[in-house]
Image 1 (cartoon, protein in one colour):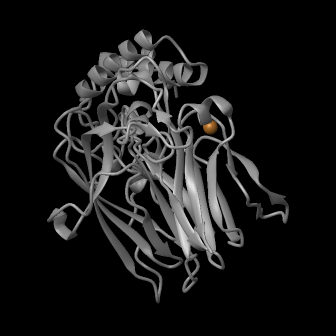
Image 2 (cartoon, rainbow, N blue to C red; image 1 turned 135 degrees about the horizontal axis):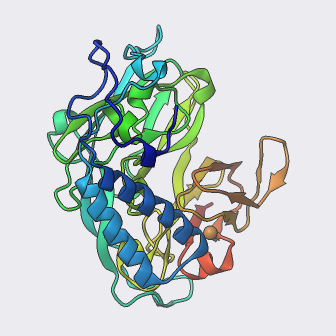
Length: 381
Ligand SMILES: [Cu+2]
């Protein structure tokens, strides 16, 4: 089978399966130009994010990727191979488990990366770009049936919790009317069938991999025993590199059945907003969508508490997470106080709090730290 898209033109559409599992719509719903444009711009984004680049060129590529993504039509789900004809039952909770339901809506919001305008660490005005607002993309939690938003839009999106034996049932709506492109939810760590992968695969896309503006889809993911841990979820639609960088990410926490949660538990996303996202010339280095101490999360704990900081790498860079005055023990039994975390990896720093005072936590890659990837950790006696 030749998988080179340049040589597929004129090929006859394969027979469709009768099980109704695949998407409806026209065989060439995604036109050839759109397909190539999306693939091409995605690849260029990776290169740009890794190497750093000319901000003007970054913005140009982002505009091209957005335009291409807006042209992508609902793919059909081509059954070229036997694996494409497989159909899957929706998983159910194990005996004693439950379905944990969430309602999440993707929407774009005007976002301020440093609302106080101050860097409390240095006691100075935020030294980044003068303009601080741009359009970000968030997953926002709603009450049952999308009745009402819960809390303010935030980056990362809501943390989804389950125990082994449960299913996570996530009702997802693409509620954005600005970017005009399909987005999805793609989880790490949990178990899912191809329908609930939440990934755009061009012609081979299944139902959960393309949620167009105004559409809804329910993902069902399984908290199997091997899923215990903290994992990212993020957009994996046709323009996922750019839309994930805009803020479409969050975390899943899976515990053993009946396991006690730590007294203090915080998701700490280390990520950045580049010129392709903000329109600025500089890269903004962030923790949870904000930059510089006083804007980034201030974490609070008390002596004697069981503290867990789940640090996730949320961009194309490697970060080194460091907490002043503390160390933690890794799975190999090694004591650490600084540890690297790569793109969409999770590092958990869990320790019994024994050292009161004002501390900092930050990425120890200096250019990241100095551009805002730092925050307060306050420990009461
Ligand atoms: Cu870093």
